[in-house]
Image 1 (cartoon, rainbow, N blue to C red):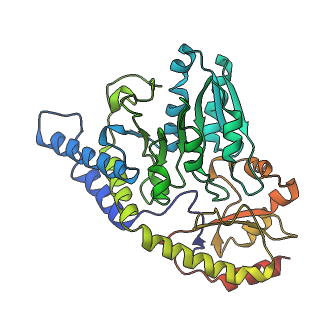
Image 2 (cartoon, rainbow, N blue to C red):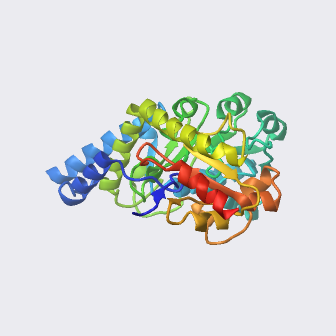
Image 3 (cartoon, helix red, strand yellow):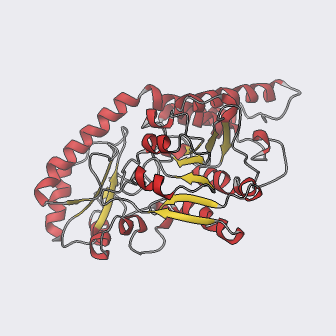
Length: 377
């Protein structure tokens, strides 16, 4: 038997109904959404519009506020770099973000600096969340963009977006959140109307890889003044040219709809797994990472004194599949910038592993996991 997959923060298994509709639109309903002269194109366009409605409904947005992309990384780049030109034109060159963002936010922010932009990386508390008062203190008249994630991909710690939105209530800066980890799971947070831009990925909510969206919410009658990063067509309001991947979009739409419909059942399943894990592991005195009152139900980031993460991952190889950080930086072994920003020293950071699951996770023999940890010590 293969090991049980416990790395759902990296990617999730396909929901069966999502897989079915994906295959249908790959093999049967394969029309081009831009083909206006025949029924295949008309059906494809109708399916894409339905998916727009399904994605928009998750965050209480409108159909025309959904821009389909290849995933949250592209959405982050479009949100951050797409605002650059308008900010420079208005003499606003200051960006606020945090020290614990995904590289898909930190690197686009760094790419702004050669144009004379100044990026402030806000510190976080030992619990792994940014203090809204720190946002308030760092705001300047020339702050053009604030980009703060919804939930951290390594620790699962939610950020206080609603409180930060209130801080920004009377400030004109555009507010963006990388919601890859929380979209479809923590619903009410993203429905706050002061959050202007929301990035999401299909494969984090049991949809396919290669599809995501950027929600571009109007503020009053004004849209964020995004400029495209690529050219060659008028698709997606001119912001993301190219033939729309109808099958992927339809699958994302259904995954989003199911996420809302089944949210309570999924949360209950994830909480049950968490309770079982903690019941078996608590006697080993794990060091928990982050404020556990703010952690998503499906994530544990923890360390066991005397063991480094690589030893744990190798030791569990035939039992469970886990990670020690972001899949996007796993090619290099270095202490996590997230854990360092939380004040963990290198020894503690190098001992942390991330265990993440979902409602589709099969039963885990947590007693066997605990026994393996004892044997490794």
